[in-house]
Image (tube, rainbow, N blue to C red; front, side, top):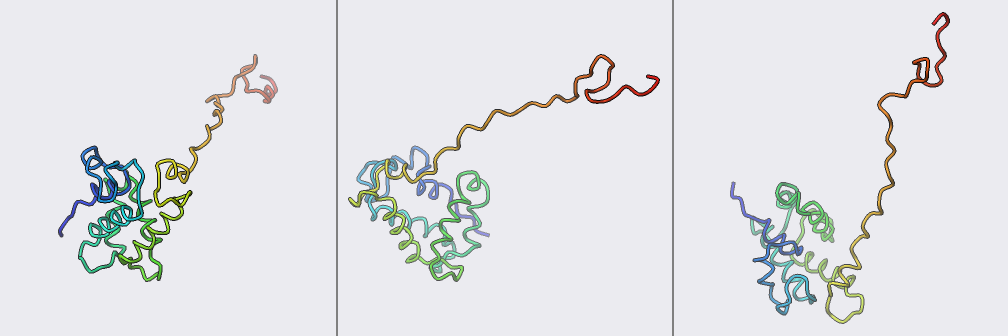
Length: 165
């Protein structure tokens, strides 16, 4: 079985790449790095790069078997399952095969939803506004003693002393 390293490209596509990847932005990024404004062209270029890496057998379609790499370490710890879900939603005709055109259409729809001011650029602020809010601080946990305190009789509270005791 031929193993192709997918992790570095996928991480770069979702903006979690290493410094070396981030220093060489894909075409259309205007030299602004992964955190700067992004055009639709740049997003689709990155989608094409991801498509090429995931389409291991180069048949022009990404199947479930080819997406399985996203749910295995190290990708499973780096957002791979979420990415798999996003890619799977691109399957417009629901035939369990994602084509390049379907990926590009999904990228265009995502771009349109992110570009709040419709200026043709998705800024870091626009990306941040689409991120889910961090969870609220969890309420303090009550601690339960491992053993109920005994009263003067040595019996737990609510228990009567046995007759003759």
